[in-house]
Length: 366
Ligand code: ZN
Ligand code: ZN
Image (tube, rainbow, N blue to C red; front, top):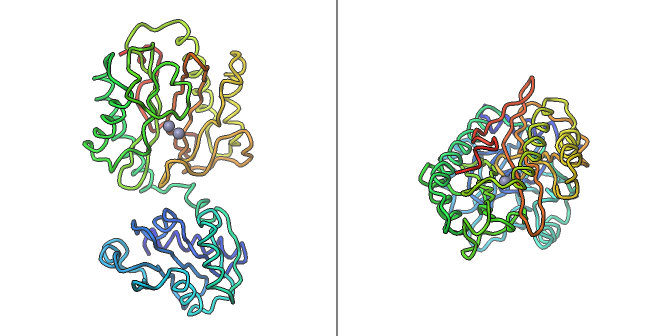
């Protein structure tokens, strides 16, 4: 049994619990998670029936890659000119499935309509987050891949930090980070880096621009991550090339204290909103409550943003094996923003901070 077939067996248990005979997995990352296949435009049919094995519906571009990545998985190759919906319907009929779960988060309305038309004698059940809930808990191999993605991101940041000079633009830093990530063995950046100088650091998801340069203002916020082979990392640090000004120092201390309080609250069984509240209350007590305008963190894995979410409305408990970001921030329009983000593994008896870029106040000054 491979790690992938074991995951499909876990999914089968979920299907049973949800009274589903089968699930059509259309989300690319879910397909990868369940098969190891890294191509796209392919659906995976997972069924409860013992005699009819799981089947990957794919096309001719991928037959060779499939032989390498998942040699044991039965595949059906769609011929050019045959559309995916009728092709899917054909195999659903061959499996004698009268009902089929559909991933409602992963289909456009038009694709869904095509499937519904092609599968007119099959009852479709909309499902939510079945595979995603399995993906929340990382196994050893996945944790190693995330550690690798973190290592790459940190090495790339080391180069950037060293070369940070007044006059360099946000865009130059973003481009250089992407290049360094690839040099250190990453596939690419986990997402387009967010580089915000001064007031532009108040945009939690600002796009780096060439006109905005280090030294124009006191500090720069850098939010970056790497994609290793398939898994992601996600970090944020604030740096200054000048003197540490009192306002930055004040805001930074509050954010750092909030982040440490949240990390300290992470352990199996801790309720997600309580971890969020641990940070939020520190920021509110310091008088910056409304300036922390997003949730505390998110899961990372095959996607850079995935479940679970550390947010005020999340009532579920954390569990060992989850990997989450912890990223409180304070954003003051016209002045700028401070966010500090690390990646944290929930362990059996607490947590492990996987990221190691220094974050104490004096480390901000380059
Ligand atoms: Zn980030
Ligand atoms: Zn993040």
